Amino acid sequence: MKHPPFAAVVALWSALVLGRPSHASEQGTAARADEFVGCPDATEDSALAGSLCARFSAPLDYAEPSRERIELFVRKFPAPGRAAGQVWLVAGGPGESGASFYPLLKTLRAAFPGYDLLIPDHRGTGFSGRLCQKEEAADSVGGAALQGAEWATCFEALESDSKRTRAFTITHAAHDLRALMNRYSASRPTWLYGVSYGTQLVLRTMTVAPPRRLDGIVLDSLVPPETTGQWDLSHRSAVVDEIGRAVLAHCDADPSCRARLGGSAVAAMQGLVDDPKLSASVPGGRPKRFFGSLLDSPELRARIPLVLAGLRGGDLGPLRQVQHDLEALSAQFDRFPQSSVSIPLVSVISASENNARPDLTEAQVEAEAAQYLFVSSLPGLLVGRTSLAYPRDEWFGRSPAALPPVLVLQGDMDPKTPHAGAQAHIRLLPKAAGVSLFTVKGGPHFLLFTAPDCFTAAVGAFVQKRRAPRSACSI
Image 1 (cartoon, rainbow, N blue to C red):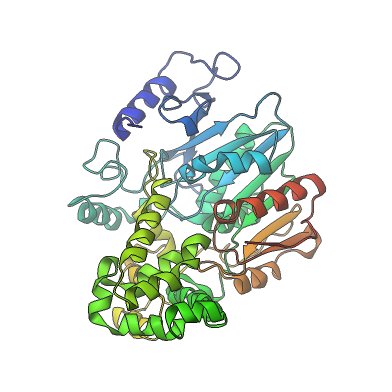
Image 2 (tube, one colour):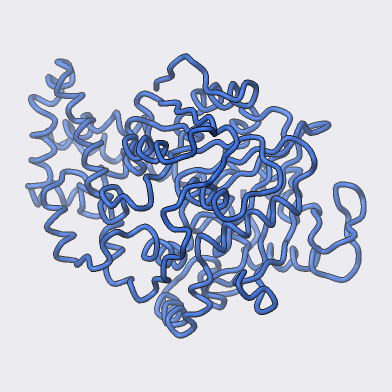
């Protein structure tokens, strides 16, 4: 389906929501500019059908609320019939917008039956106010994504206006979330879901500025404790390598898998990375990084031995098919105008709060990567970004004083937020909260997407009974 340019969507949105006349809303007429109205793009993609949109004005810096303000975008998918309550969905990233949830509405409806789904774009992402106001604008060369010379001018702008740049903190985003929930939540059951970085933002919100009403929290792929360096972003390749080697070890323990490879999967992977000619046949010429990217999908992960066997035998077919399927998987989430990840926001927050080694060098990254069979690109992206970092505030590393019932969904094969890191974080949370850990055997990252059946069963039971189901789940 062909979609209108990003600029056209935003222009139409501005005409509908920001103009002076009253506008149609779910009740009929919007009395305030920040009320929900029919989304201008709701007819452009079936995933957005029936959605309502709102823009909310918030302080750029909550310490100076009377100064510059920023607009926050929220999309609502009303429940069929009378709603049982609301679910707020907080995306990961930190550069991802709420659009990452749009293709997953069927699973969310099954997990939260009868609930309105409210999906904000947190500051710096999607249709909300951006860090680079010109380069990430709708009418810029690359639209929401940076392109060409925009990379240089964007980061120059971040450097030159450091005060504004340093307002895009997790703590300010936490105040945003509270303000949004208090503005739009009704006096009905309210649930809060966060995934990956979204779990960090949710817990910061509960520490800094809890919303007025909250019946329960679902944390999908919980981040490790902020003060624990071994699982931070600068060590991401070590986390990825551990999961990748576990996949290879599983093959080595299976006689049929070993027979297909003609020997050890570990040896086959090592042979691939050591052979320049074979490495060149892998997309990007970086087999460690490419195979690391396959670990996020259970289906693609399972085909790693098959791809290795093909490469050893001179057959590129399995590799090309995996590459095609990986691109198709990503395309599901790239079709919306606000889908582009905000690299400026990733850079600022990652450098400030999720990098335990600000003095990391490119030489260190390369030396560590040489020890691994699977790597992530993140450690390398952290090098040289310290000038964009804002000081960690008093809330860094602190846990909420109180929580409603919490369900943590964690895969034991997660290559981004490791299971051990989630367990360590749970031990720091208030004991009285009733925190339940539901482990998905074989589960990778983002279980809403990668293990929908397990997700629906666990969340459905939690919403009904305020605790995780007793039965295990595996994929």
